[in-house]
Amino acid sequence: MGHPPLEFSDCYSDSPDFRERLKCYENELEKTNKFLKDVIKDGNNVINAIKEYSLGVQKFSQTLQSFQFDFIGDTLTDDEMNIGESTAALNLIGLVLSVQNACDLLIKPLEKFRKEQIGFTKERRKKFEKESEKYYSQLDKHMNLSSKKKETQLHEADELLDKEHQAFYESSVEYVYQIQQVQDRKKFDVVEPVLAFLQSILTLNNLTVEMTQDFLPYKQELQLSLQNTRNHFESTREEMEELMKRMKGSAQICIRHSQQATMEGYLYVQEKWALGVSWIKYYCKYFKDNKQFIMMPVEQKTGTKQTTAHLTLKSCVRRKTDSTDKRFCFDIETNERCSPVLLQAISEVNRKQWMEAMDGKEPIYHSPIQKQAEMDLNDIGFKFVRKCINFVETKGLTQEGVYRTVGSNIQVQKLLNAFFDPKCPADVDFNSTDMDIKTITSALKFYLRSLSEPLMTYSLHGELILAAKSENLDYRLGAVHSLVYKLPERNREMLELLIKHLVSVCSHSSENLMTVSNMGVIFGPTLMRAEEETVAAMLDIKFQNIVMEILIEGYSKIFKGPPEETILPPIPPPRVTPRRRQPITISKRPPRLYPSLQPPVFERK
Image: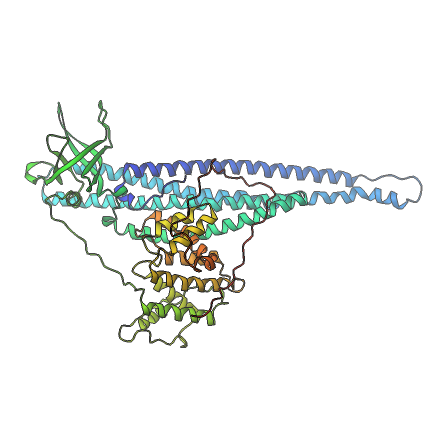
């Protein structure tokens, strides 16, 4: 089981659970760093051993060359001449027993990965830890400020805390982004140099032809997997980078609560002891459905052992400013405690959020949400898609990079505005000189991405991703087949129209270079989208791509008609023994066959 993704929104709440997950990534990073050190050390030993071996062979060959046989008589036979020249000929052996550019193949790429990826991640970690210490130190001081201080002093203190929190939040987002990126990159940045080095040893040291031939199919399959993984990484990286930038710029509204908690975050709780009163920091969660309020201690008080408290909320009331020396306070009454619990939020905004969640007496504040322009899956939309498909199939099926290359944004917007103009919709001539393949394909993708709900719908997104994650290929196809017929009729009609077209495009992949895998990368995020934009959703993009591949490769079966059973096929049983990761080995294995795609042939309706 892999590590759960780190959400950028979790950087804002900075919960203990988030820190525990982050610690798992840090431990994995240290393991990777140690592993790379060992690989580089052992790789250098192998290279030095091969060099010593090569020098020994060359020295042996030179010794043979320097020796000459004396002969008796004035003439040698042909056999004697061949024997006499043999020592010089054997000198050629030394020419093939060296590993050319071994350091360039193995050591330098791994050292570069350690320096540029792991080293940079450690720098981000240092910055994160420094900003974390500064912020929490400032927060503790801030919470102790008396509400009776001058308004200007309190305002300056609030601004300073906001500044420290923003710096901490940005460093946390950058660190989370980087530590997840390095975990993904190592899949190919580490394996590729090792694979190239092994190939070099096989080739340059002239091992048996049988061993080399056994290694070749495995090498080719592994190279394909590495390239696909790199493609998935690049497409995901761009999405995550954009999400990171947006999150950094909207720190105040990017709170995401885990496991359906209505509200969560740090609160200071007043606790009375025999010798006085103290304020203890807790990480708190509130679940509105059952009114459960959970307080998890963050700092243990000396001489006591604090445990997590589970309380049931009865009411929430704002504490008047003149009734306590502390700021941002509110009381809650619970079933489990006879007296109210006095809580201190970290800011006025934070207090209002807690009180709103608990149905307290503070007014509720809503932030205006700007709704983006959306497209509809209506008759005009169908007409637009059909015209785009007809244009591409008439003029662009063999064009290299069709759907991958991007058209001018100005031309795309011009086409969409004209076609969907409510005054004269669909009144656009696709054969005008302004139209080219890139503009048409970009406009088609933009339309599909801009639907008010993705074509594959939010409700089926999770089931489709789950189907793509199955290791059983027959189950994948059967599950996707069944789920397609759970789509609304209009959505399924549009999907069939589009997938039929993509099959035609892929059937010309020898000319346009657009394979099924390439189409999956392009149309996975276009037709599928999680309802909530999170890092976990970004990491599932690669499985969205696989769903598209299943639809294209299984087009003739899926859209021939609904499956015989209206329910999903049974989930394949789990493995009796866990799958073991296979090392890179020289082994005989049957080649992997990929069926060629043919464009579908159907009667015109």
